[in-house]
Amino acid sequence: MRGFSAPRLQSGTLTLPSPLRRERRTRQTTVKVQNSTVNKMKRVVVLLSGGVDSTTTLAVAIARGYEVYALSFDYGQRHRIEIEGARRIARALGAKEHRIAKINSDIFSKSALTGDVGLPKKRSETEIGGGIPITYVPARNTIFLSHALALAETIGSTDIFIGANAIDYSGYPDCRPEFIAAFETLANLGTKAGVEGAHFRIHAPLIKFSKAEIIHKALELDVDLSLTHSCYDPSPDGLACGDCDSCLFRLKGFREAGVEDPIRYANK
Image 1: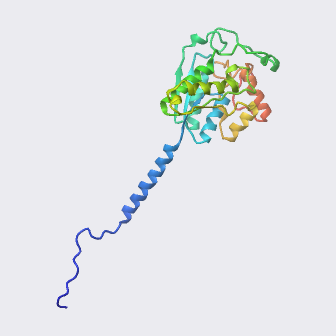
Image 2: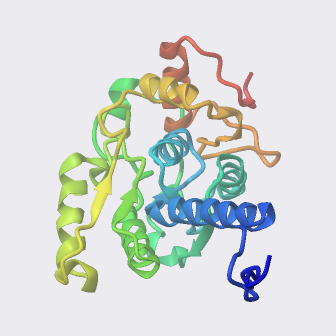
Image 3: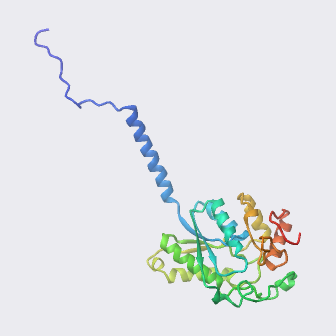
C-alpha cells in the first residue's frame, strides 16, 4: 500500500530474558541467601578436654546453631591421651576449628595430674566428697577460660562454653556456678570488646546436671561416647584404669543412666 512502511526496530530495543539468564539470577540469589545464612551463624569458643562433659557441651553448642571453635590444652597432664581424643571429637562433631594451646606444666607441679604426686585410687564417694583432692590443678579453669576469652575476642565472638559440673564432681572450686558468674563479670570488665558494649557470656549448660543426665543428653544428641576419655591414669595402650576418681564418676554415671560404657578398662 502506498505511503505505508513497516516500523523499524532499533537494535537492543526489545530484549527477551533468556532461560539461561533467569537461571543465573536464580542461582545468584540462592548463593546470596546461603552466604547470608552462613554469616549469621554466631561464633563460639568451646573448651574441649575430650571427656564426657566437654564433648557433650560441644554437641550442645553445635545443636544451638553456633559455629564452633574448639580449644584444648596441653599442660603436661599425665593423661595427655585426652588430647588425641579431643582431636577425634572435634572432627567427628564438626567443629569449625580446633586449637591446642601449650601451657608450661611447671606452674601446676603440685597437682597429682601434672607433678610427681601419688594419684588417689579406689576412693569411696564419702572420701571423694571430703574436700578438694590432690587432683585439683591450681587455677586451671581460670587459665583455660582466659585463653578462651582471648580467642573469643580475636575471632569476634562473645560466647564461651565450658563443661563445668557442680553435681557429680570432685569439689573443684572453679567448677561452681559462682565462679562461672564471676568470670563472666571479669570478661566484660577486662576486655576492649566488653567496655565498648559487647556482652560476653560464659555458658555452662551442664553445671546442674548429674553425670547420668549428661550421658542421656549426649545420647540424645547422637554423640559417640566411645570417642571420649576420662581416666586420669590410663595404661600405655590407652585403657582406662577404672579406679581413679574420674573413672569412678564416669562408671557411676553410666550405671545410673542404665547405659553400658563403650570404652575399655584395664581392670575389666
